Length: 362
Image 1: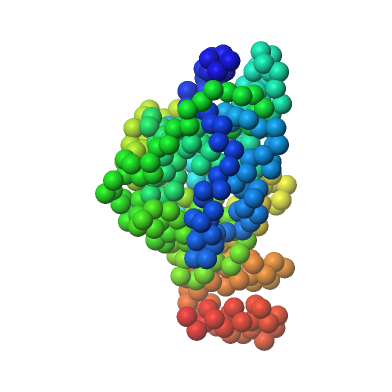
Image 2: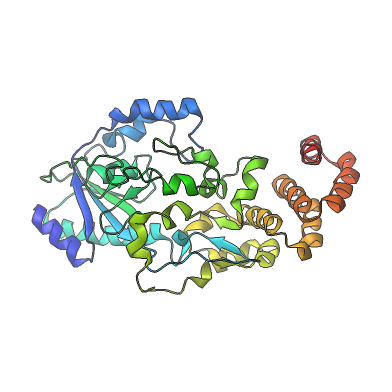
């Protein structure tokens, strides 16, 4: 049965895969509790640890897990744009969640033609710890930046897996964390907000990728380091020696559509956003978060010709947009912006007025 499943995976051009029958990841509990105590957790995580650690709470009949990795970013070169925004390479092309779901659905159904089984497909959609499952299945090891690093494709692999009630013979491969990172600290030294911990792991709330996605307030001292990122961040992956081979390959695609017109993003409608970016992996965060990030980018890039357009956003009904527009104006022209904010404070709600005061004090 296992060999037949391997044949099916190979027929579907999947060459990064593995199996595990470990259903309980409770051994990670203390690590997760430590992260919470240190404030390294975030709102995208499942807070019910029983759901995170016990596979059978998600799929009671599960006996085995078939994990796969799909490489991406071949030949990618980080875009350098003086007046544009940037999307992470994860947002290139069709949303990888949909691609992997389709691929895993085909695999699961082909398995079903040979061995009847019940299954559940997971692609970053379950509360389970995807990277740990894929690590135990032998797909790779954790780098110091907490990403899973595969022997052949580095960290540029999208992960997914099938929970199945089939009993698949497997050896649970335990690959030691950081086994190949050794004394390399390139990712740690390259992270703009020092989000990567020296002992390995991540303070997610400092991570640029997280900051481009969160709806939570972005601290003032983190905004400049976001530069012109609209969604995601590739810095720790681009500098990683383990990704040198995949990045040096002949590009399969033209990555120019990862460049975002900031002026367009300020004025884009909800429908226009859905039509242009709706198929990408980053679109789930919605137009307003992308617009907020565009406003931050305009301030960081010192696009002074955008001053009046950002000034108009002080009238935006969204408190979030107003807060970041005020910050961006101060980056563009501190004196003019200070006068505008000082004159506006008395007309604003308390939460906006307090933010303006804080910005002016800084």
